[in-house]
Figure 1 (cartoon, rainbow, N blue to C red):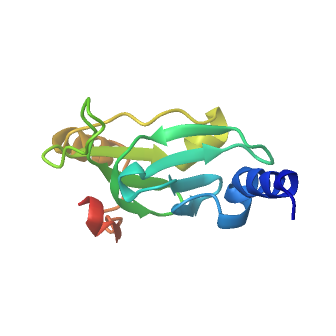
Figure 2 (cartoon, rainbow, N blue to C red):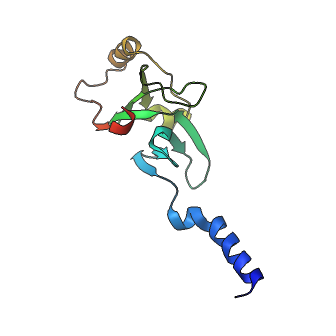
Figure 3 (cartoon, rainbow, N blue to C red):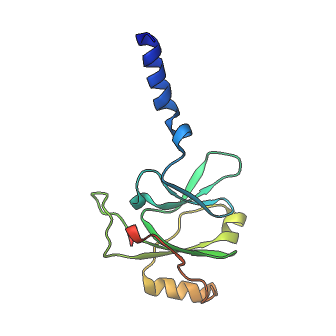
Length: 142
């Protein structure tokens, strides 16, 4: 194999690496077109909405997701925010509520970060059942 062929092969491998090795570390479907995604590391876990048959994605919940619960109507999420150095701040916990029907009707928008008290008030207001709990927990981000 000559130098030009070797160079071409190396370029091809780098170009196609996402096709060959998958999208990333995590890409789990939560509901409809809503996905939990992390490309390289678990501290990148975030929740995205993907439009039908397109590569267009909208951020619903920013990094770093560490717990999720969902049913047919709601997705509840716990996150640790990142600081200015892009490091996870485990001392802070934010809560998020994604209303699935609202996304279907009005389109995706980023979830509001709430502290526990705000989350509990909003949960009662939306009549989210008590049985809906944070069933999926990423211990490495907890």
